[in-house]
Image (cartoon, rainbow, N blue to C red; front, side, top):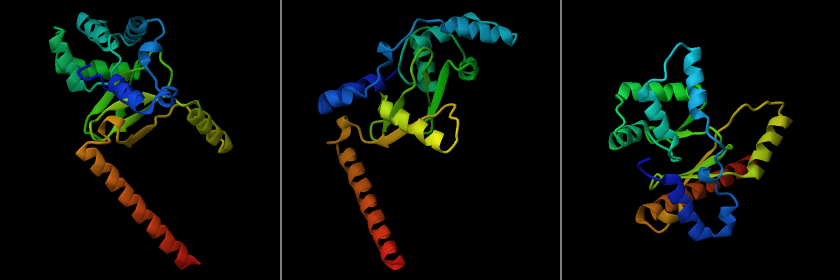
Amino acid sequence: MVLDRARKGCDNQSRRTGARFLSYSYDKNHHQEPGGEVDVFEEYLKERGLKLTQARRDLLNLIFSNHDHFTADELFDDCRKNEVRVSKATLYRTLTILLDCKLLVDHDFGEGSRYYEHVFGHRHHDHFFCTVCKEIIEFRSEKIEALQHEAASELGFHPVRHTLAIFGVCAGCHETERGRATIAEHKAAELESSKAKAVQSESEA
């Protein structure tokens, strides 16, 4: 969409951390299975007595032609740039339908806007979110997946879906003023927490 957050993030990270990061990086462009999004969408609409209008078709094609995360406002800007004529009302209704039929998922990264991404034909993955530049970096860890299933099994829980977002500072922001300040603030908070735990342990001894 407007910003290629995920790809830019992977490029920044791979330059800083090398092959070790690449074993976790997740690029949807390399994990895309054959299409079918329009068929799924049209069938979902038919079951509910709705039509696949040209506006909805154009909007669907625009969404699935790009693998980035996007907000509703960014999508609307893209529509205008690509001469896709839809109203904001149609856009929001279509996003809701795409969420309902599991072609899209949405994420709340605490920034006041929901971020959408299409998931049809893609394996599950998780996200790093940079609180400085708002970069979204996709990754997948088989170890994390296995630990989650192990924990669920031990507790007799049957997982249906999950989302994992890790907040911090990306490699590209480590040396910026805001990045250094964010990291220093986090370390100071960790130190205070450790001191509080030590005091509590002494009082309980």
